Length: 436
Image 1 (cartoon, rainbow, N blue to C red):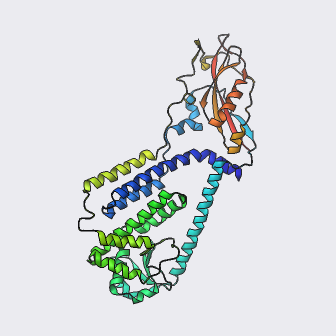
Image 2: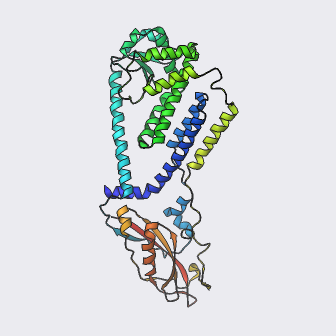
Image 3: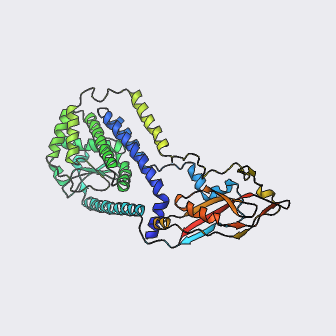
């Protein structure tokens, strides 16, 4: 178990760190835009927030560096390797959990705990749904053409919407005593959620909250998405009911006085009245907006902002490619010049070098503790006597490089010859480090 965590954190640590940094930067930009345009129409704000949600679900796109580090890329390096399999260096992994491994373990444990909590909430939702009965009086207020159904439960809770294929509005038992105006307000609001497709957002929001449970900016974005979609549906309900914002706000207050908010959220449900903070914000929004409150931004500007934000998603989803590095870049051909002396082309040799003495790398302790494995390719210059005169890294794994270079210097070869004369030649030695 420890070895697996160390290996996974070693292989994916940098990848995940870059992913998190990219997403944090993008979500930060989204939150700044939401604050800057907070007085604009909720529909515009909704698209900004959804782009932030989409970025959190979008994995980074691998860049060119992965081609160099891929085992398949060794074929394009064009260096002779004597047709040998990589020199494998094995070592028993130390039973010590590395710091990246600890982070991965804590992260995974948090996801599992929250997943269990979400499952518990879903089971509670199913318990409520088993108690449902039809609510004929409220069903009379359903908008024409809607596939919604309206039900009463035996529990005390806020009205909520649940279901994707068969969406249902669930009222608490005490809703039987509500006025027609209150029932119409709830139904118009929940029907707007269906129109905007909010029921499809529950799963992406759940996934994001599971993976980023520790990230304050992600939780803030989730809260913004919830607030914005509630305001948007309130506006739609006002238009449908032909109420003034003040009339609708009074209706919200009357409903708030008679309902009990859920002690826990139910997985897969959209509540009419969530937290007290959200409910207060909705009422304040209705009471403070004016006729031109949300229409001060031109549509052209809104489209420009959304397009710029969408285009920014792609560059931030790409791995940043490293600048060309001498330790990774192969020379233009197998022939090279070292201190003014020309080397021979390996493929034109009449006698190719053979290994006489092989150097065996020592597995670095740091790499063992961190669970790091990988293949290091070292380019060596075989001299006139068959000794290694120079070494260069072709494929690098930073913590393993020095061990591979030290082993490469210990190699001895039979001299390479061209037309009977000893010559110098470049060779490539692959070293595969693997934990048992």
